Length: 199
Image (cartoon, rainbow, N blue to C red; front, side, top):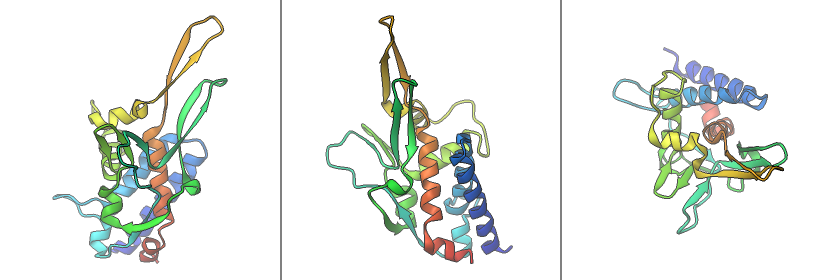
């Protein structure tokens, strides 16, 4: 098995999925999760491409240091909202992120918090495995993981809009999981040490 070629293939898949996401196909982020799982995740039954290649490059992280006593933080995403058009969505930061550091891959994969909501801390690994294993990436489960469900439901944020008739409409912030996965794709595709392994 040529694992370097397999890495090249996964990076092509990743690039294609990111392009499709940017073109409006937001669910393509679940395919981003599948490629990330293949590259980074080891289990008793499966081996990551990095382990097969036996090289562990630093990966671009756009996560910021979360301030002390902070109870809510979105580390890979921003918000976009419009009361007029009645939408509230999470969007990937892409190159607008304030932090750009190269970190050891294990820290990137499971050591940084991408969503903080009270006691809930979600890592890239948590989000990728939930999307890939339970949300249609490779499998579909009847029930999502509880923490993943929290992200699907707006990570605790919503927007309340007043209608002309005096009623109010509540809109949950959408796409928190998808936007974060797209940002992870951005990070990987801008990790030069990783890309060199596929040359």
